[in-house]
Image 1 (cartoon, rainbow over the protein chains, first blue to last red):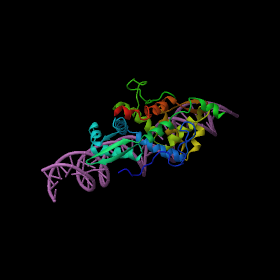
Image 2: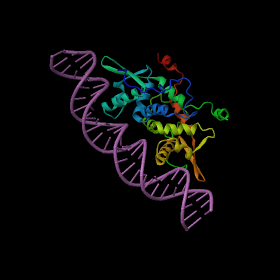
Image 3: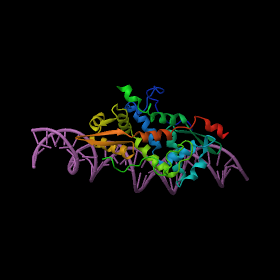
Image 4: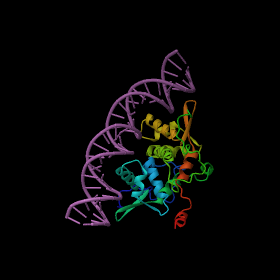
Length: 129
Length: 129
DNA sequence: AGGCCTTATCGATGAACGTCAATACAAGTG
DNA sequence: CACTTGTATTGACGTTCATCGATAAGGCCT
């Protein structure tokens, strides 16, 4: 259940640790395609709330049975959104007996946060000169 | 040209400065809807590259005439994507003579980065135990 | 004014998305 | 084994989206 096709940010170039972020250097198309998949996964209010509920859970994981009733949506719809979040590499899940538990994959959100962070609030202009 | 309907992150509750971020406290629906609009704007490779090109420009602004030829897309399509980025509050633009210049609105990317940042990289788990 | 260049808007079209009801699958209980 | 509960998958349907060609709007130049 944990080995589905993920897109996983920044797997392409291999140069993960160095990447200077979206706001410093123009993205090449491959990076843009990868990043866009993750941002697209966040581009829905239901998925954002799901992710938020999962991430903010004290124990680190949430049962689907606690997520589904929080929305005025059918169970298949919630399941579908969870699948998209998982394919984006934002969360993962495991079945334990009857129930399925989801948790955050912080590497992905960390990477997004890094990509959206400006280097030093204006130091770029000097370095570029 | 700068006064179109923007969605602008976090304008709803009014409690902008405090917001603890997506990963700490469950998002309410209104916040989720607002945030989702911005993430959706980032959920396309073309728009990500446009934003990146604009943000990483040394002078702080880019002429549309420099953006359009960088893509294998028609000029109306690029114009459309720029409009979406602007409506999401990520960029703004101004006409100067013949040309139109776009620049980044860093408040919005800053806010997204903040929303995706974990409080203290693991302090939550201890507090929960 | 007329012509040319740059950018935005309009209208159409095919693809992707969000949603649901129905159904399948997994696992515990009698 | 049949029955029940929890979750995922399938198939369908209406809406939204990305894209284009055509056209409009803004602005320089002669």
